[in-house]
Length: 71
Image (cartoon, helix red, strand yellow):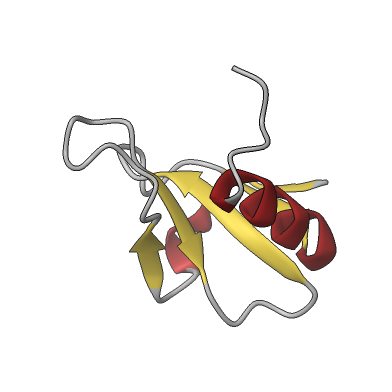
């Protein structure tokens, strides 16, 4: 995993459909980054983002959709 100290330069951020609908716990991702998915906290747009390898992010999203994550 790689960390981007200031992710505000990346464009096209969108909130995850699994975020909590405006209650302040929102995750945003940026599309179009080569070979990785940048993820950040929407409350801190000038803060850091973490780059997840695309295949790891896909595995995580699939597990979410299939309700396979432990509580």
